[in-house]
Image (cartoon, rainbow, N blue to C red; front, side):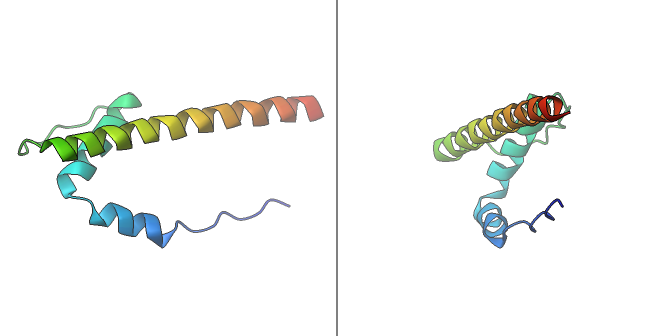
Length: 84
């Protein structure tokens, strides 16, 4: 029997809410664009270099997570095919 998914951690919610809104918005827009979804650009003040660096790190981390999920999906599909 499959286990139910655990609810999202409160820690991740606190982490995101502690980031400057411009950083979260920029990371979200870049994530959407990386997945082929058109993100509407809102005019915003230029991010300072530390915010830009954080945005880049968040974007890279999200991309790595996406790649890992894709790899895991492929492995699960191969295992299911092998067991059938």
